[in-house]
Image (cartoon, rainbow, N blue to C red):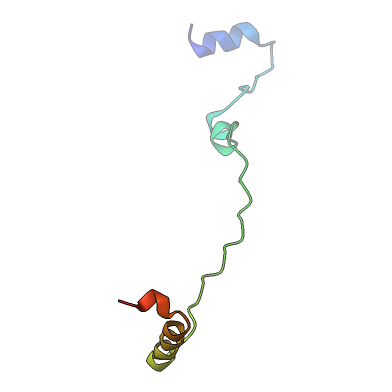
Length: 73
């Protein structure tokens, strides 16, 4: 049955019925969309300390002197 004929059957005289739903309303309000999860604050990036080559050499020398059993051949 064409929509015009349905409109004539189901409306009273002088009354025009609005459609129950329109496509534009469906697009504007999605019904089953999940709520947005709150974002967690990001962890700050670890920043390496500034060491010179001499600092690294000194640290390794100290470690070798403290733990000679690890470096015996």
